[in-house]
Amino acid sequence: MTGGFYAIGSMYVDEPKITHAFQTGEGVSWGDHSACLFCGTEKFFRPGYQASLVSEWLPSLDGVIDKLEAGAKVADVGCGHGASTLVMAKAFPKSSFIGFDFHEPSVNRANELASDSGLANVRFDVAAAKNFPGTDYDLIAFFDCLHDMGDPVGVAAHTLEALRPDGTMMLVEPFAHDELKDNLNPIGRMFYSFSTMVCTPASISQEVGLALGAQAGEKRLSEVAAEAGFSQFRRATETPFNLVLEAKP
Ligand SMILES: C[S@@+](CC[C@H](N)C(=O)[O-])C[C@H]1O[C@@H](n2cnc3c(N)ncnc32)[C@H](O)[C@@H]1O
Image (cartoon, rainbow, N blue to C red; front, top):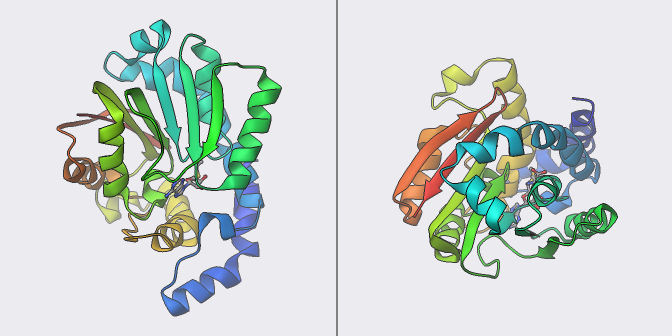
C-alpha cells in the first residue's frame, strides 16, 4: 500500500488539471500527470504481480503455462515501467517478452530495469496499443490499462489480428462488479477516485474516448472483446483487487 501513496500524491499535485478537464470536457493524458503517478503505479502493482502472476493468474489461463515453458512469444501492452513483463520474463526464460507503452519516459525506465535485471529475453519499445508491431503472439496481456485507453475496442481488434489463432488475450483489470451499487465498498470507492482523477480523463484525452473507467466490470469488458471480434471470453480468476479475464479468438 505504501507505494500507492505516491500515486495518491500525484492526484493532489494534478488537481488543477483535472478541474480544468471537468470545466472543458477535455481529458488529461497519462503522460501529463506528475511523475509520482508513474513510480507510484509501479510500486503499488509490482507486489501483486510478484505474488500472484506466475503462481495463480497465468495458470488460470487455458494452456498458457505449457506454451510459456516451451517458448512463447508474448507482448505486454500498456506496460508502464514493465513490472509485470519482468516478472514473467524471469519465470519463463525460454519465452520472449516485449513490452509496449506510448509513454516514452516509462519505456525508458522499463529498459533500465530490464538492463539491471540481466534478463536477455525481454525488451521494451514505444508503441500505441492500437498499432504495436508484430504478429503470431501466443499471449498478449494488458495489466490495469485497457480501461485507460481511448479506443479499447480498436485496441482489442488490433490484438486479435496480432495473435496466433490459438493465442490468448489476458486482461487484468481492477476488481469490479457489474452494477455501480455493488461497488460502493472501500476498495470500489478507492478505485472510483483513481478512475475520476486518472483513468477516465486519460481515456477521454485519446481518440474515441470511450471512458470505460476503472470499474467497468466483467460484463462491459466482455462486450468490448465481443465487439472487437473475440469469440470466447471468461473470468479466469480474481483477487480482492483484480479481475483476470481471458479472451480467445
Ligand atoms: C495504470 S498504468 C499501468 C501500467 C502497467 N501495465 C502496470 O501494471 O504497472 C496504464 C498504462 O497504460 C498506458 N497507456 C494508456 N493508453 C495507452 C495507449 N493508447 N497505448 C499505449 N499505452 C497506453 C499508459 O502510458 C500507462 O503506462
